[in-house]
Length: 551
Image (cartoon, rainbow, N blue to C red):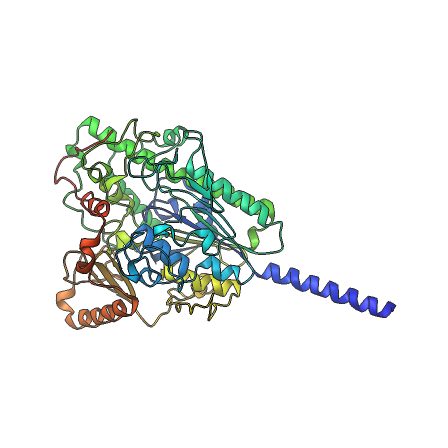
């Protein structure tokens, strides 16, 4: 009897030891997503904005020079959450239904979310922040595998009004409305506080967790706290041209861009700072002061997340990845609303609905061409920081050529997660991406893949294979070709000299489009919502000047 008891005790101890070992081996995963943050808007990527916490993650971890998103909010989020190209996931255009399965505006059942897969493999799954892949009220976080969720709306940072006329749009916590008193909160802080609370709670349990921390910052409207705005007073009086030059030089010093890199050609309609009046310069500078304050506050929040991880003892066993959902935007809020100002207060306050605008975004996207919603590098390039103290060697900068479709296979490999062959009687879509772990943990400089990367959004198209990038901008169908190894600023279109290569890549693009559900945008153009047509028009500026302010 005594012998049996001792054997049972030994087995219990062994099981406990095995469970503890498995827990330690299965890391926590935190994915942090910024919204409308340009490639150069972090200190670690060339900025003057104070981002000490993200810079610390960069310096203690790894940065990729070349990492790609889908150029605009909802399609990027669809790919992040599922590991699919956005059309395959059902969000080919935006969170709008354009009448085809690839364009239904919400995640389909065949595209499993990170939460569904990781939850099925023993993880607790958490969301704090923006969702934006649930058109028609379908495919909400609590329906797609998240154990806990705080879903913030896509509007004001100080109340629960949305973008279009201030209609109240509540936050949701675990599927139930989460009321907040207008003027008594700041959205970035709410999202941070929930993330910190989750970490505090989950690190006391015997399960690893996945946290999707999706900030709305620094997406317009430009809303920030006075104490943060004060830090940047006068810092942008030199204008966007000088800011772009300063950031470019810092990027080269950091090694984020090659010394041989040539800046992209300035758009003809970027305003000439020297021709603006004193009042206009002041108004424009204020916009960038507020934008910077929004980035600053997000970084402060990330610092609180890091503090909680350390306090909980989970910092050594947690992978953190930080990215942005698209390049900085070109849209003008005033033009989007047909010249009618919605402003009832100065820029930065609860009554302001201003945007960063094309001029400052030109600096945010240094050194690249174009903006959010374009397939040039300024639209699809994201800063990428990965931090994992026990796995990633500090201070590395690598080329990468990674894509958001690579995140899912990366997380699943790291978690030892099995991607199911069947899920709720549905056969899941195969994952097209590649694991980033050889780049993050080993010495591999770029992701190894046999096929090109592809993009399409509202008629804008691109394909990249190795150093070559094929791109076209709607409504043109003409292909441009760039050698990104020598010309990441996309200053020299070499399509005319490389007909065979253009033909080869275009054939691969159309094969991918057919397989993925992409259709010619002419077929869908009439179904495009008027609000999105207005959004397109809002990106076109007056050729000279600087009027149209809504302050």
